[in-house]
Picture: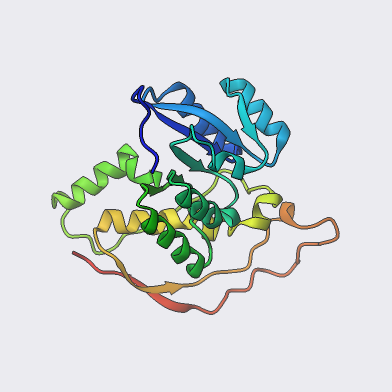
Length: 238
């Protein structure tokens, strides 16, 4: 299993240097003295080379598998597209690398179970990027609930928005705002209330951003049609 080097630093590689990958790589290279950024991987070669040049990283590859098997890598930060997460987790665990993976682990429960089983077998450390728990505002709210400062919660309402629509390439391989981002709301609901979700209720409408349509597609002139509600969601109060 990977261990901290004799210098006391954790040698880390980042897989995927898109928006969040560049952020993690930059933090590792400039803001965390306990870590050392040693390698980068991305299938987008120009983006990879630009990021490597900015951060002074000389070990880079457009094949993440070359990074996973490096002897000088103690831990991996997985920031590639969602459809690659579970496979990389399993390979990294088999190689004895500690893992930080951006959420979600996968969109398929069976593949999630396979990834978690691989982590369990290997004994490596594994963390999913639920960064909201480390936000000072969310933490103060959680502490107020836990201390009884605001009384007993009966209703928790969370509203989440992205500043702009994601690019079409992202939508093709992810779950978009509902699967890739709403997972933060599930986590924060559990964190703030201090209980697990017991029931689920969902309702939605079909609304399309014209910017995400193909060149031959045309947005409908009809108003959004509401979908039939399905399943129920309740939070058990402590």
